[in-house]
Image (cartoon, rainbow, N blue to C red; front, side):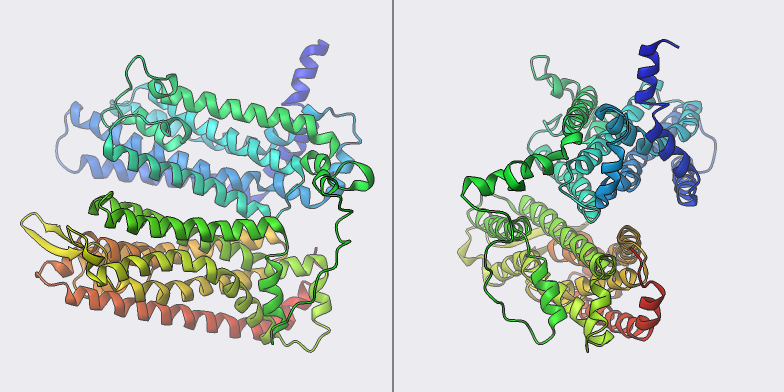
Length: 609
């Protein structure tokens, strides 16, 4: 075999790292179940879409083509969604690998070049994601039997999904090689991917209100690129003189994502043998980072830190204070609070000065509060799921068990500390809704057009409703704090009984996602379709509650059909009270169950790393 061909094969198919990852991963039942569920979901959605679009009776070729095109649109969007959700799960091992630096030390003693190390890790972990795409190709090909789905659209949708998976994988490998993050950054990485997709989608939807067509965000979001491909009427192409990324959004997304992936791979290859970014920052005399030498400081740990006042429950104090142990965490937390608070207040000011109309104010306010609550819930899940496993892995839990601290004190202290840490962050979305609700309660402080808008309830009925229900000032904090406490307690339960941090995080995310999603979907549908009881169900979930408070005409349509809003608004508040009580009762029940099984569980997992 020619030496050049052998070298190229060593970069990919015959790379020992790639071979090891593929062989080991192929034996895991979890990967088999993920592939099975992935294909099952696509098949069910395709069959459901075809049945829903065709219905009963005779069909001509035109209707079959329309049904095939709509069904393809459903599963194409679903495939990209699943790839964006599953790619971080498969790539999580690359980030978690940094948790044991000895792995890197051993790997770098082998004859493998930096490119072999980086590409081996990337291709070995990316193989399972690309295998999902290949496995679903026959399913997509079936849609061509109905017509209306050109082969070029199928290939383009696969190119969009594949480029998204490659980009996510390259980012994960770059984080792993940098060595500035540990395995607890897996959840942050997951949040970052989801947040980026949500923000770019929301901003594009905002820009579409003023001018329909391709925006600069269409080329940097896979869902928007796919939407421009499958819905050319909603995304008309830019003029010939416009920028290339506006005229060819699909090609631009593929080119930009692959280009960024290539840059990250090259950067990782150049820094992998010097310890990554961490090695560059910590290099120099005595291992003192350059930024400390710049200010004439010595090694870290040389400065005196004044004593701190400990709370009555030391576990609660430690849990709340330890989260602010580094400058990066402090800046990230207070930046979220400052930017979020200023943005919320700015929205009310813009609406008061009529720079935003009622429809735009509602849209931006709803997207902002939804995003902030979702981020805080994800942070709570991550904190709780790592609270016990972190201490078990570093041996701190063994020391705590020798103290007079009881299991009840330990678990309640963990929860109290996390809630205390998250309360300033929770003040951002709840404060924004309280500010908007208070502004409406005071009549808009003299706003010329007032704060009452005409809302469409049905085809033949309209109703004058506040732009935001004033009950928001009470309902939001009443429900959100117990909900976040519930997320934290579920995370603590899985953290206590899980062997590793990654398993605890994924399990907690799944449980909270299923429970919150079920409550949210039920409340969303019931609020609009069931009279009186529907608003109460809508008030039990933060997402449906925010929707009902900001857009009652759409969220509480059936209850408002009689011409009055008092019953619907009362039901919404009752639902918030009941929801808060349910979450608090669940917190208490989980806490008591954990206290009873604490000793048995900790002894069973004692010494686990």
